[in-house]
Image (cartoon, one colour):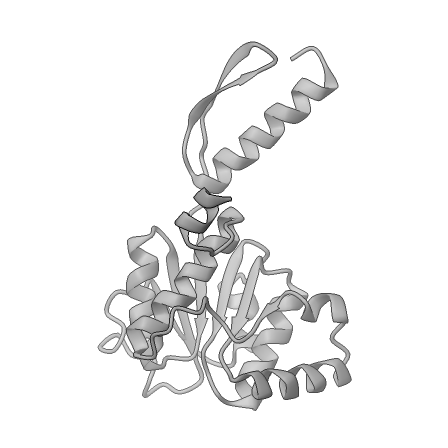
Length: 204
């Protein structure tokens, strides 16, 4: 556009258009530019074919996410229990990471309550730079988990990226309400949202 500052501003606008998945017209230093976005479909990888996962798949699909459910238990990871999921994978998450192409663009929700299953999934997701990594568990569970992960060699920097307990505090406890809290945090993270009530933001 004729200046480094203008180019930088246009790149920022283009990246925002990709994040939101929408084309738009922007004005940079008095010049009107049309940005046509061709974003990749966002993907949510759910570790643990539990009841919350069923609602989470449904919410995520409504929001345009591709969904993958991974569980080592074939009896739980079935098409009958997850008729809307894009892909069901039976196996240990760290062992199937290459198979599903787990990568930096993915959001990962670890919903198991099994140390031998969830911690390898967390480590693999953090090491691959997944943009969102969250795991269920009480504050005590999270503290104990963090201590074990640090002892296993996970860095403080990587651990700081782990969302646990997973989800926003909405107050609900039913499986669908928990799923709603999780997808709300994933969406807020994707767009840089605060997670605060809109009236709070408007008042500020």
